Length: 429
Image (cartoon, rainbow, N blue to C red):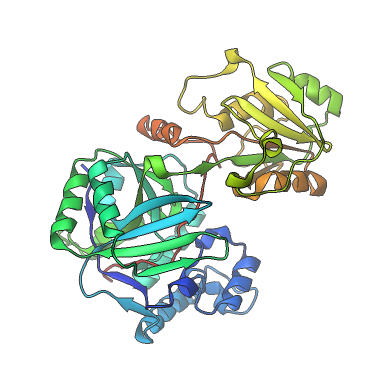
């Protein structure tokens, strides 16, 4: 069963959470990271992306870069920008986006649960991305970015978390992107014990987002075990920083696609080949509305968004189309039945010649948070056609992970993103 434990947290000093909290390190390009770090000297991105502290052109994987991250982390602690709690606890982390709230438990998960499959994956990781975070965690002896985990809702746990939220929060701020972040601590030994007991009855936990961070934390933990052959399993390096959310509260946005050319086809021939497996409906008006919050979408804007499985909307030569896959091509397989798989298997591969979506440089992935206007922009800039996807559901994610399978690349886009720097987990050197 799942092992979830409290930890002795490092967190921002009172009044600094809004300045320190930063989006995950991997959502920024090098140029964007440098600009963001310069804009806010207290942004945790300065530590998460320590190459920003050097001259442009610095090898971001050089040993001195990771040493700089460790030096800054220790400096911020000594200067009181970050504080270390005196005793272990859990933390409630609430995020509100566009009127929708999700409440997570910040805690440490077991690397043995990851290795045994209690914590389930659905995505393949890349070695180069793992190595970067392995070096960062190893140099800092700390996990600075939480892994986004999901579990099937348990009313007992939700009651405990909601009760905690009646206390005064440790932090309460709204970030530049309009997301409200609030946090509370749980230090009462009786509640800590109840939470541990509830998770001992939970059979599966799922990685929603942060596969590379999870894999890196586990590999550092295994490395520390080798360095401490007399370890007994209680050491902090046996656990990794996580925020766990109930499945019913999670929101998955689509991960859209664009392709740089039509594989040598003229537009009429391209549309004719699509019609071999899809019905094609030309949508009225040639311009989709710009990105707006879901709660503010009009019926007109919704008309350009897929509304059911097996449906895609396509932007081609300044015109939107609705494509609906014929029923005989819909698969019941956990992976083959995903909408991203249906598009790949019945359009991108046979019509556009995209054989391996992980490697083909003609294929561009566009996060759903960017809206339909970004798809239009890409077709005007460097792509010939774009596809708006129907989002993967959390139940589909669970089904793929339960089957021991992996999703195609870029199948899910979770929002809102967890902030780094609000909760930090130290491990032994």
